[in-house]
Amino acid sequence: MIYSPFCCYQSERNWLTEFSRNFSTRLPNRAFVPYPFSMSPQRHNRGLMLSRLGQLGHIVRLRCNYCRTGPRFYRPEDLIVLVGDREVDRLRRRLTCEVCGRKDYVEIDSPLLTGQERQSVIVRRLVRVSTIRRPIWREELL
Image (cartoon, rainbow, N blue to C red; front, side):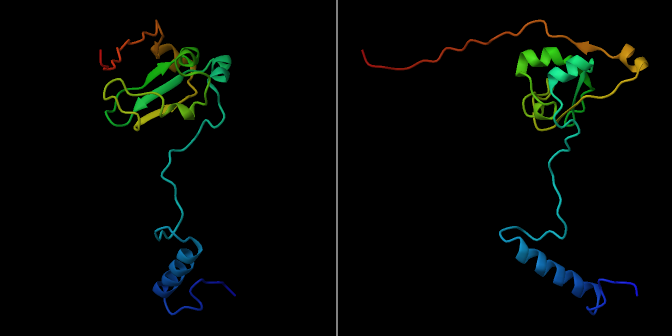
């Protein structure tokens, strides 16, 4: 005999209402969603540290999905100087787009490039890190 989820219900609509009732009772304090999903970005490079990328000879690609800036490629050693030795997927909130200045649309990954693609890639190198000095004032009585 073939099992059907609709065998004990009159129609598909009754099955869906029963499913929603069971689902909402199992997950209190949440809105009804007929299936669980996640809006967080996918983590393709889980556990891949910048220092390990440098040892393997890979590069890091940064793209902005808001202003659609072309991909920019960086050496992992230069990014270690800026943000420290971190996972590649954790850099999303640390780096900003230079065109629009947004952090939430930046996509960072470490692609595997063929030899032909590596010859045509322009890599941005870190020249120096400049610090902005801002005075902070306090008012007091004489």
